[in-house]
Length: 274
Image 1: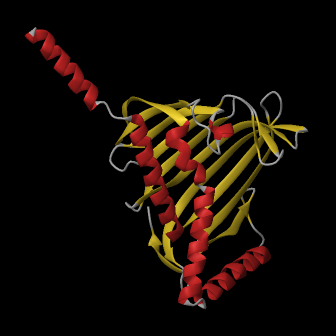
Image 2 (image 1 turned 90 degrees about the horizontal axis):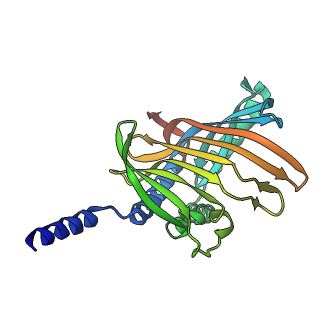
Image 3 (image 1 turned 180 degrees about the vertical axis):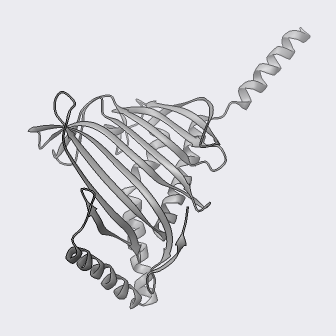
C-alpha cells in the first residue's frame, strides 16, 4: 500500500508540473501585443519578394521592393528605397522624402489634445487589425510537445489544431489551419510559428481563395533587449484571384535595421540598434 501510495503521489506531482499549453499561448498573445506597441517607436526596413511559379513549380517572375517603415504620431509611412533590387529614381526618392518631411512637420504642429486623439485613433486601428490574435487561445487545442532552444534561448514547442467548439468571428480561417509555435520560456513571446492550410478559405470579398497546402512561416527576433519584432515571414501559397485566375507564389518578407526614433516634433534617430 505504501509503495502504491508513493507511486500515485509521484504521478500526481509529475502531472501537476506539466505546463498548461493554453496558458502559455495566452501569455504569448499578451507579450506579442506589448511588443507590437513598442515597434511604433522604431523605424525598420522591409523587403518584400514575390516569386510567381508555373504549374511545374518553376519560377516565372520575381518582383521585389525595399521600403523603410516608420510611424509619425501614430500613422505608418513607407519610404521606397528599391524596386527589383535597384534604387528608386532620384526624383521619386526626393518626392517620397518630401512626403515624410511634410508629415513630420504637420505632426510637430499638433496640439497636445490633437496629438493624443491621433494616437488614440491609431491604437483603435491597431486593435482592429490584431483582433484575431485575442481569439487564438480559444480557437485551437494546444499541446506541449517539449522544450528546445532557438538561437540559444529555451522555448516551448507547442502544437495547435482547430478546436471544433470555437465559433468566433474568425472561425472560417482558424478552422482551416493547423500548425506549431515556439514560445520563449523567459519572455513569453512567440519566436516562430509554422502553419499549414488544411482546407480552402476565402480572403476578402471574393478577392482571393487560399488553397489547401499553403504553408506559412513566421519568425521573430529580439530587438534592443526590450521587444520581439518580426524577422521573416515566408508564404508558399496557391490561390485563386477573383475566382478566375489561379496563381502559385512564394513570398518572403524580411525585416531588418530596427532603429529607435522620435517623431513627435522632428525625426531624430537615436542610433542603430541590433
